[in-house]
Length: 330
Length: 183
Image 1 (cartoon, rainbow over the protein chains, first blue to last red):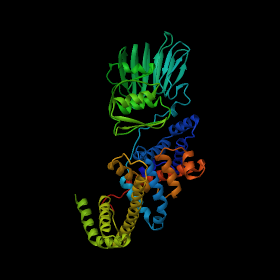
Image 2: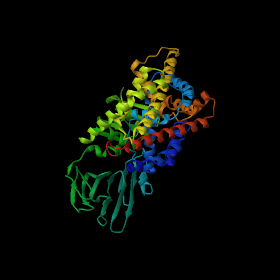
Image 3: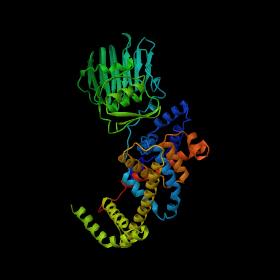
Image 4: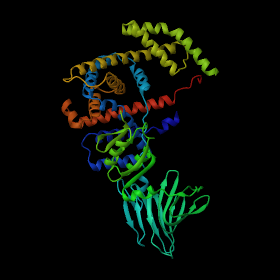
């Protein structure tokens, strides 16, 4: 019981979420306000939790929203609500009953949480939602940042060091025999051996894919090390270093603005698209595991979603242009 | 398991001691014997799915009466809503194209929304349902209700908050439900 209540957002945060919702759906929210909302959601787990409640409530309305008779339904509700004053007088201890009946039909609707960009604030270089950035460093090294990615730069006299803060980077290093080039991650250090490679931070590890040259991995805790040659990729954590596998060419596709899905669950595809979509993008749990194949444009999420809807049994519901849910096709 | 056996014995004695007066009491409230029998039956089904431990007969009586009273109110509400829904469908200029199944789903959703919003003033609830279900802007809702759009924004926030709190309370309540047999 205490665990469930511990997760419950405070009254103030619930109120903020309700106010954000009222503003966002009013038809009067500006682009700046929508961005502020996004930042608010991403700032704290408690905010996301509260927003989850907003979504669950909103979900209860979808049978009405999609019905051809929704106007009649709303009229009926208005009439019953005002006629209900009579019933209300008879309401002695009715709240207990109301809770009971509401509880029976109540189903939880979980949306996968938005990626957290808060951690990227304050990093030296970051790419926000919807952007893929190319950064040229002082020595001629080039770094592409995927949307919602960030890194810090620390170039010294004897070492060129990047710190991966979040997301995914494609790095093409410039040669400098005097100063080795390393990328530090929470899980371990990568040393470039004359190279072009991508490094991607995930919740449970780091994936390195080498396109040219080679990269040496040193894990942070177990001090395991290995060299990944061109055309290979490896995943590691602070104390494990997995087998080295052939590289998936899709790894690099994002630098060209393409998302390549190859038997990828829809939930993962949507998680990628979220990096490029300003606003709310939810996927219903019933369709989250559908398998997706093909290439989708990252810079035009609207078209990517239409393409998904044409190949999968899903429909894309746009309550507002920036408020989108992917649902099973009726 | 001895625990579940204990629960079913408890339930049988609860049913034996309380079913009779509950049907009579609900009949008095509703004025309809068939509805009363259905409702009392539903009340016990609900007790069976979410068992409660009662300290004594008086406690059980109070609880059952409270629950049945809430269910009576729900029943009136549902019938009001159903009638209003049929009236509204009949009043549409074009006959509806939706199937009976779709209509039942709409009514079900409407009933659940109604249960969620019951603590709110009718105008607030109506504004909220109009805004969300019909995806109307604040200004459009304001024009229908004859209030300012600022007011509509307030109604929507207030109604959403009310629903969120209810949902949170239900989630907390279900998680904190005493396990059968654990007194």
